[in-house]
Image (cartoon, rainbow, N blue to C red; front, side, top):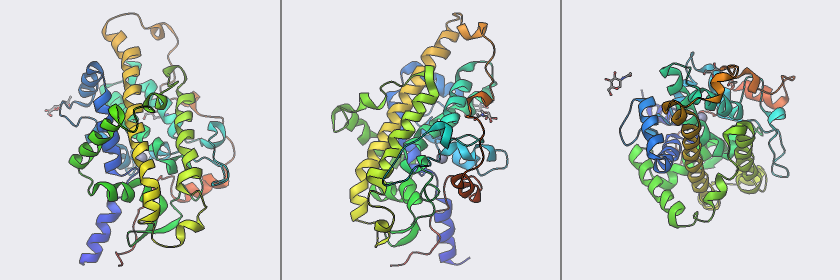
Length: 341
Ligand SMILES: *[C@@H]1O[C@H](CO)[C@@H](O)[C@H](O)[C@H]1NC(C)=O
Ligand SMILES: *[C@@H]1O[C@H](CO)[C@@H](O)[C@H](O)[C@H]1NC(C)=O
Ligand SMILES: [Zn+2]
């Protein structure tokens, strides 16, 4: 294979939702805020007591969705908000979550499954791995947007590459900031975000990121997370419409305008994920380990396949047909052309 073909193959494989870097960083931020008891429960579930127990599995769901066994989970990485950016941004669960599910129904399903206690260890591990990933995906604005298939169909140029807006937000913009996508890169990005939360720019906002989050209403909570990120599609991702993004290279002017939002969203995802898992641990696992009667044990079993969590089926919309043309996937393959300078 030629050098160019190899390089192209490498960049195609490198494209994931929030790339590997973004997901691992969300996970490291979360690890910092997990209570000790939640952390050791998660390490047990994942059978990994290393210092990267969540970061190591943070992108598992992106690999799994490309396998035959995991194809069912491809729609869980996004919700196709059928709004009209940049003039109007909004998420409506009943309107936007297709009958095959979406990120919001997946949060509800895997939150129920991770804490239920009647499933196998493998099922619980699967649920935890999905949660770690989907909380991250939901903070990426273009994972909460149907327009041009979440930006996958918006051709742009970034740092001399011809690629698409979705892949730039997932992968290339974060990597332009950090300079790599290893676990060490993610860990060092996470420490800087954690200090911004502890004593820097995010100190006054962080409580607001998790305000109102409740296991009593997972669909409502996850819909707020999706709406929060979706609003950024109108205000930050494409405030002047698509044509304005296709005038030249997005680096450095557009990059400079959005990179603060990318950092904010990654920090938010990690902080939310930790709080979510701490709540799951406290209200399900801790009670069970203490042997106290779980009220749910006396109530009818929930549908552990979560079928009751989905909105009522409706005819496919144009946005859903466009997504189907991508075989239900969340993210295009990124860079399809060789590097041109
Ligand atoms: C847990 O991990 C260890 C090594 O890291 C391995 O030997 C063991 O089989 C694993 N246990 C399970 C239940 O997967
Ligand atoms: C819930 O999770 C199970 C196991 O992965 C899956 O088979 C089922 O389709 C999921 N249901 C929803 C509504 O996401
Ligand atoms: Zn994903």
